[in-house]
Image (cartoon, rainbow, N blue to C red):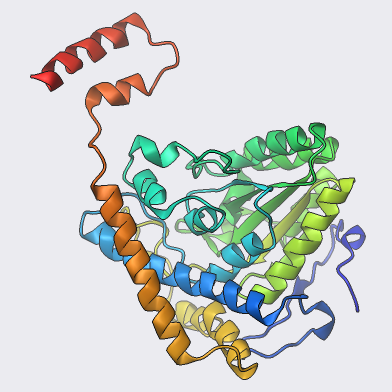
Length: 363
């Protein structure tokens, strides 16, 4: 069986996009079909469906005023969940603001993810033993942190990786280059993902960089760069697994560009994608929907059905309802608490404010 050779991915020239499952749900590269059991394939698809339901429900909760910041994820389920599926609980996840689905599937309770969206301190308090950090709002900011975490993993002799995500706009940031360069120089076990969904808010990818691909930017750091069809869950999984194996074996980091698309807005904080995207473009990308092709593939294999999917969706909706209720029932934060949580060593002027608010809040 042909395998992905990372030694050949450190190229500046043309980079081919790896695909296993096409838009029709057909296998187009038998050599790269992942070694996943039927149960594992079903579990992966269930996570993707879960993410789509979570996206739709979170949008409604935001509009109801019950959820705060939210970055839509519909269209990026294969890019996000299939990559995360190739990781282990020992690996350390440093997500960006659109990567809440991976964070929850990695082990963060959903109610805590809702807390994070609402700006509650509990949303940034990670459970004991959980290998992950709160979502990073600063574009590509987690890249530098990931390099440091990966170096720590290496120094501690652990067989694990640190992995992180940004969008293609993030590859224009200094943190992007500093992160991959540092990790490359120290051969730190990191896997860096760039989810190329076409736009950095409203700025098209072509205006972000003159590079033909984002993957080839890895060459500047002397590390492998690989581009994959980000709407193809099987290809994303296989590429990620190869990258993880490469990093764990001591070869250093890998940069993976997933070519994907967000069907919705950049965030629900005022962005209107109709102002900068043509409807024909969106329609074209919707024909490549990662759920449709994976659903077709599993249905043809006889391991998935419409009834199973509807039953699972109802279960997910119940999970979400229970999580948001738990979030909403938590103690409300006080101004004194916000100030207390801001500093390790509280300045005298801030302490005066804390004391004043504490007195008011107790009246």
